[in-house]
Length: 421
Ligand SMILES: Nc1ncnc2c1ncn2[C@@H]1O[C@H](COP(=O)(O)OP(=O)(O)O)[C@@H](O)[C@H]1O
Ligand SMILES: [Mg+2]
Image (tube, rainbow, N blue to C red):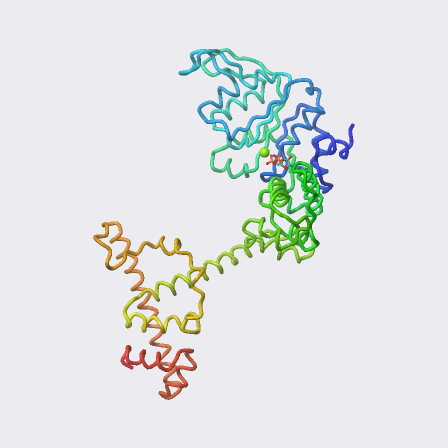
């Protein structure tokens, strides 16, 4: 039996992570049997090598190997593609056609994205798996075939089973042996290795010296989340190789090529913990908190902007107090430059002077106003109560009360007038 290392070399698989090695080893072990294999793992982890290894090391190696992307074939034609059709089975079926299961007789079929198969096709597939029988579309003749199936999925099959989108019996039939490929972020030891390999490949391809990462850039590479796994790493190695003038790449330079680096904060945090202490739930929690904080900041900016848009002096005066409460200052020092106009537009509050708003717009406007009023009321109640209490505590001394409330004396004076205190 060929060794794991030799197989990896033969199939161009880079990396020495134990989980990767285990996956390759499993592929080698099941290859000589006819057992169905389900390859699982996120998109871009390298699932496509596994069925190739299995086919090449099996007694079917001289037979056909057909890879089918189940997610890419339209529902209307997938049965015909897989199982063939009779002449006249449907409009346009001018000739009898053989499907992949007939063509690959004696070989291997790789069903990629198998979770995307429509239910009727799943029924046909189950039958082939159970007794090697299938029927062409539009035919009544049962045919036999001898095909080894390797399937792959990047989605949670149990979710699909629960939602009645995937047959449970088929799932168990397909996954007699499961080979799971780890995401890149769980193969930290391989990340730089893979990057160097890709950088060297692209250096040759584009006839440029190979790029090299500084230490801090390597750190960044290891901390990044790699949602698109090896496919993404390769793309980035290519972009940097082509677009950077310099051949020594710093973290700052690399950062520009890593999308949504903000959402990678959780990975950075969990990275500081001891290995093995990796807690998925905590990571999700960090992410939620992080997103919430950024939402809140956006909301603050938006509120501020809307408040400052009130054009009458009276509205501005009233808002000043609220702005002070939220920001602890008049809000003038808050940078408005980065407020996204598009974000403001989604609110679609009609301008007061806009010409004849539609009923829909009116509804939106009034509905929003209703809610606003309710909230303003309860806010006002609270504010009133706070001011009263503070004034009591300081025996009516406005300066001390204003200080405690964190607002200016002028604002407090206005409030006292407003609430008739
Ligand atoms: N261990 C690896 N070494 C080198 N290249 C790899 C490795 N794993 C994946 N790749 C490359 O990454 C890309 C994505 O792999 P692929 O098998 O298509 O992923 P998946 O099918 O899991 O989405 C391919 O270009 C593949 O050659
Ligand atoms: Mg794939």
